[in-house]
Structure formats: C-alpha cells, structure tokens
Amino acid sequence: MRDNNTVSFIFETWYIQHTASTSQRYNDNLDNALHNLQWWSPEIWNERPQSLIQNALPVPVHSHNDYLQRIPLWEALGSGCISVEADVHLKNSDLLVGHKSWGLEKTKTLRAMYLDPLQKLIALRNKNISRKGKDWKGIFDKAPQQSIVLLVDLKTSAEETFAELDAQLQPLRNLNFLTHWNGTHRVVRPLTIVASGNTLFTSILSLNSSHRDIFFDAEATRLVSQGDDWTNAPAPMFKFNVSNSYYASTKVANARVRKYDFPEGSEQEKALVDGSNPQFADAMESQLKQAKVRGLVTRYWDVPTQKNKQEGLWRWLMDNEVGVLNMDDMGVVRDRARGWSSLMSRSD
Image 1 (cartoon, rainbow, N blue to C red):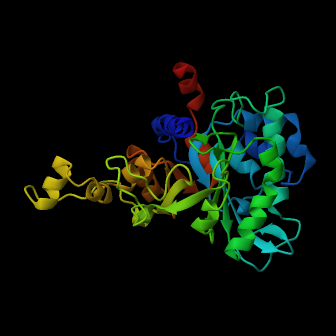
Image 2: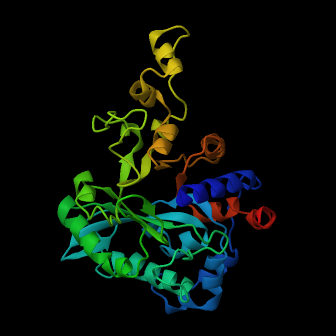
C-alpha cells in the first residue's frame, strides 16, 4: 500500500539520522518565522512560513494533543509530523477543540483550527491537478505522496459527535481530498481522517461502504477479535482491517513487538512451526505483525519524557518498524529530522 510504504521509508530514513543530536533546537528557522504569529494569523500564509512547511523533513511522528502547541497544526507540519491530533467536544452544534470540557473557547473549533487550514493548504498544493486524478500532491515536497493524518479524539457523546464530524468533512469530501475505502481497496488522498476516543466502531461501519472516509483508531492490544472470520484461512477476514481502520494504537507500556515464545517441543510451539492453527499463530504474533497483516499502522503513545529513556525506546521501537510515535516537543522532533535532505537526494 502506498501510504504504508511511504511511512516505512520515512521511518527507515529518520532512524539513520535521529541519533545525530539529542538537544532541542531553539530559535531555528521555523521558530523565527512563527515568532509573532498565532494560529489564526493571516501571515501564516506568507511565503516564508509556507516555504518552511512545504520543505519540512517528514518524520514518523504523531503530534500528541497538538492543540496545546503554541501554534497548533502549523508547528507540527513545520516540524515534519505526518499525523496530528485534536480532541473535540460537541457544543452548540459545533466541535470545539480542547482536552477538558471546561475552558473551551467558541473560536477554537475543529473547522477553524484544522479542517479549513488543511483544505486551503492542500488546495494550494494541487492547483493544477485534477480532483479525479491520482497525481495529487501532499503537503511535503520531500514526500509528495505522504497523506497527513488528522486524528480526531471524540470527547463527548459518541453518535452525535461523530455525526457532526462526518458533516463537517463534506467540503473536503467534495474536493476528493480524503483517503477513502471505495468498496475494494483504500484510495489514498492528501488527508486521512482517523476517529478515536468515544468513537463507536459501529459508527465507522455505518458509513458508505463504497466511500468510507473516516477510519477507526483500533486498540493494538485487541486486534485479535472474536469478530475475525477464519473460514477462509489462511486468508481470513479480520474485524479490524484496511477497509475500516487505520491505526493500531496503545501506550508504550503495553507494547509487544515480539511474538510469544513457547518451550521447544511443546504443543504450542509445534502448532506455530507446522502452521496447523493459523488463528492461534495470529494470536501469538507481535502487535506489529498483527497490525501489518490487517493493513494497519502501529502508533504508540505515552512515550517517556526522560531523555535517556526516550533515546533507548525510540531505537528499540524503530528497529521493530513501528508506524508512528506520539511526541509533544516539536523542537525535539525537528532536531531528530536533521540530515534528511542529503539522504533524500541520494535515494532519488
């Protein structure tokens, strides 16, 4: 799949470079360009900040609670994040962005902070490209076919909040900017919407099955399900799959990147070796393998903040081909991305 392959390439490249420096950057080009701006500032659309965003070095990072950044969305994109997160609350028929129900501001809506800017940004990148064509361009010049993920964490009543999210996506849907399932395969577009939090899996399934453009944030520890259909093993129909889900997420403490081991000669070990029980073999696999066979991207959150723990953990997770890691500090993200440009030129 194109989106998974692109993420994999980004990860492999970033892994080579991310150990070069461990100190956070201050007053770099992006900081200076955004210094006196806010997320609503018209100057965001000036040539300098837009050029920095367009030429950012993409990294396999999810901007956790992105709305808490000084300049939500823009700092993440300027830092090369390929995924951003917004918590939303349904209030007065609109989706307000914030972690808690108290302190919400009526001007901080999902439309104003994320949907409208992303629509404008993608439209600018695709001015001369047909909406029906496959030659769309993403936000980053260095990975033009990389879809940006907007993970929307529903904090209020599941069905009503989801319905409002679905309605607010219509302008992007009309422009054919959204990744979608067309009934037979996933069609990757510049923006991929993932619903999390209070989202009901049934709400995802209730969407148009020939144009489903909101995907589920599946729990990585629960990918193996009684809903998996092994009738046609070894080609089962999994409950969580590429048609309805995008991420397989869990916190770092729950990460299982290796399959279960059993004593040599045991019945379990024999079943794994001879392939006589593929359903059992799937249940014993690592989360990474379980996600991969389902067509999902792994995402780990609650990453330790201590630098020494972060360094070891990042190396370990990246060695095992994790999809994206949650991060809060965009300065650290940009610092890890250093060196990408030369590697990109060598890969062409």
